[in-house]
Image 1 (cartoon, rainbow, N blue to C red):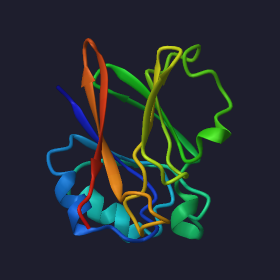
Image 2: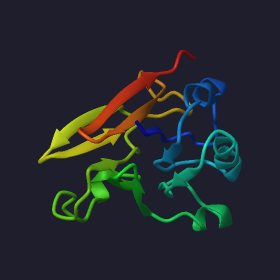
Image 3: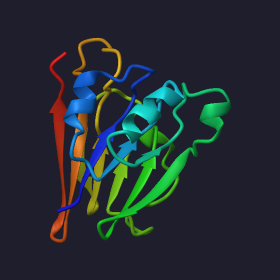
Length: 153
């Protein structure tokens, strides 16, 4: 079963615990606020990476990142953006199985109208009392399954 590691809001801090937790991923999706190209380079040492630009990603390196990405993997279609409030399409009508977004730093898994919405939380600097987390997305012929992984930091 294909597994995708999902990470967001690293803000330039890629923790060793996050890299270790993503071991075994076929693909890593970064949902923005990367913080620098070195974060993407380190993630690429684990697995291929698809990343979108977050509201704090600036500079020439960030200009190369799109604001949204469509990921086709394991027979599933995923729509990736940084802030779910910027979603300007109907994911179900567009044929997406899941929407992946970050921005809020709050891990969340929910289903709406047959679409999985996944926010892996923030794997970077801790904000308020929110957990430091990332997520796994399992692509099963029967459906999608997501799991939040809290990092012990």
